[in-house]
Image 1 (tube, helix red, strand yellow):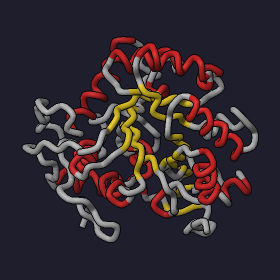
Image 2 (cartoon, rainbow, N blue to C red):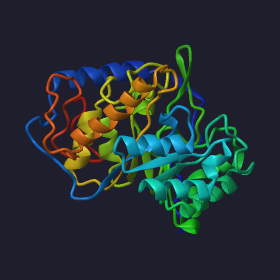
Image 3 (cartoon, helix red, strand yellow):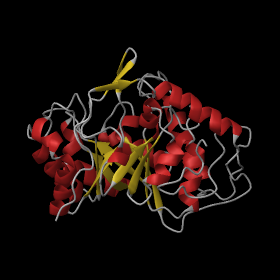
Length: 333
């Protein structure tokens, strides 16, 4: 018997609390030094470091592989878009063979501006994406939860995702999102929820920038979804209303803390850099962002044993024990 969604249809708007929550979380981590500065934690399991095509300008498949290979990434995540080369199996497999990089994941075209890419039927779109993933050797498809207006697709999303995953043998890792805002209210446009903690998903993706926009405590959330967490979008945010996708360490999220926590607790999954380089004019500056991002990941996941800890930065702290599902270790008391 399939599991059912935990949530009922929720109210359309709620009081805007994201900004105050972000401020409260930041104040907590500023006051509580929870990063183990003198410890070296590395997972017993392999954690691959990937580069998302959305981090590369221009957003082409070839440039994504080129930059990933240049900066020492293990593989790539390709966002399927209007660009036909993002679903060109021969092209992707050829570039993977030439560079020796893994195709770690595909990002399904579930964004607002991609409603009819691959197929107008939402479930068929996911099946096609999952089959594309198998064809290029990726075992994970990242996808966003539906919008409230997407009818039966939204109403049956939790069970439907599980069914497509079972049919295709590909993990469908649902990503945390955030409420939209109008004045003093938050609009709940995602259904069944922007917050994956409320749902019974088998596989999840955690995105730090989305968590920042939503006012979430990243460290606490990752502790709660640890058993379902398969995929991390590595980025940062400063708690603004925008989905910023900053270079990790340049925002206010406890990114280093969370990565060290994953390493300490022998997490197994993939970490994919998803930073916004679109508005950076100089190629050298864009490439530095990609280099800095993978260096940050390697340091705090313990993959560079000889890397010195950046003790002066407010983000070089992490929790010392795994938060339980009922507790709040590493979070505000």
